[in-house]
Amino acid sequence: MNQYIVQETAVIDASAETIYRILIDYNDPNAHPAITPKHFFTKIEVVSGGIGDGTVVDVHCKVLGQTTQLTMTLIEAEKNRHLIEQDEANGVRSEFFLRPINENKQTEVTIKTTGSLGGGLRGWIEKRITPRLLRPIYAEELENLNQIAMTREQALV
Image 1 (cartoon, rainbow, N blue to C red):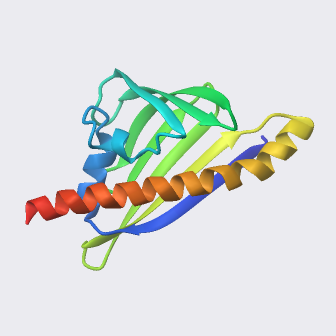
Image 2 (cartoon, rainbow, N blue to C red):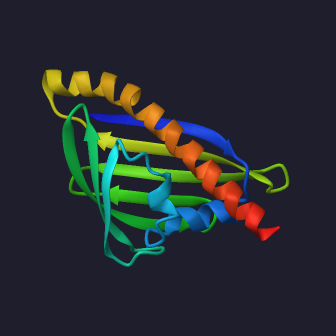
C-alpha cells in the first residue's frame, strides 16, 4: 500500500498525565479542540462520547484550499503513553506518543500520522508535499499543547 508518514516531536513542559487528559477530552473547548490550529482544523465536532476511548469526532481539515472530512475514533492504546485517532474509511491514522522525561516534569510528545495515497502521479506528488504541509501544522499544535498544559500544571501548584 502506498502511504505517507509524517511526524513531529516536541518537549512539553508538563507531566504525561496532564497532557494525556488534554488529549482525550474533546468536550472541553480548552482541551483537545484548543490545541488544533484553526487555519487547518476548521471544524471538530463530537459525534459520540467526548472523553476517552471510543470517542468519535468529525474533523474538517483545510489544506491548499481543499477541505477534507475525517471521522476519527479515539483509541486509548496505553494510558498516559499512547493514543490513536483513526479513520479507517479514509486510511488515516494519527498517533500521540508520550514519553515522560526529567522526572515526569516534562514529556516528549510525538504526533505521527500515516495515510493512504492516491495512485500514479497524484500519489507521487502527495507523498512529497504532505509532510511539508503537515509538519509545521503539527509543530504549531505541539506549541499550543505546551501552552495549555503549562497553564494547567501551574494551576495545580
